[in-house]
Length: 114
Length: 114
Picture 1 (cartoon, rainbow over the protein chains, first blue to last red):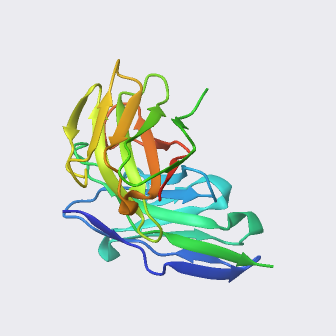
Picture 2 (tube, one colour):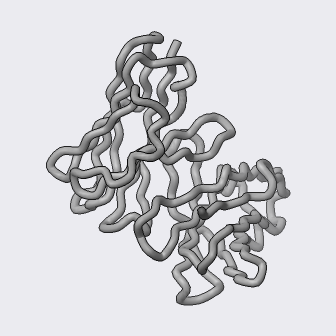
């Protein structure tokens, strides 16, 4: 069974600093991988998606993630944090069969300090 | 175009009462999903519809939970004899075709059982 581990339930960075949110997956074959963001009192919004076309995936709001098969990781980064980036971030994995639901990590809450 | 909508946005009920939560997916999306989000617990998959049928009901926590989808569109999640542990945000999502596609989420229904 697939699983996703997000290291750190809460990450705090200063405005302008690098954002790094960690995600490791467990899968026997390279899966589809997703990062979603949830702003307070809102649903989840897709940030970016990996589908094996390119290992470095660029998403919205300046975020990007790199798929590293050897490390089974899909960490999310942004060079310079903005106050508006404060939110909950979820990593998710789906297998290529298309027959199983997305498996979500428990989420990482990002705080941005002025 | 319109996104996924859910109603009500908030629901407060007394223990033992039945509740119905509604989801309107994006027009043309054949796949629909229900998740439960409890504080600090991430997203818990409940059920998935492909058209009007539910190939995967594995996540429903008990027989008090049921869901249906009619006309390949609107879905209703029903919780009978609500318990306090049912208090959570219930999220609905839809995707274009199959389960591995990008999922688009609604804003959720916050259920509070007193």
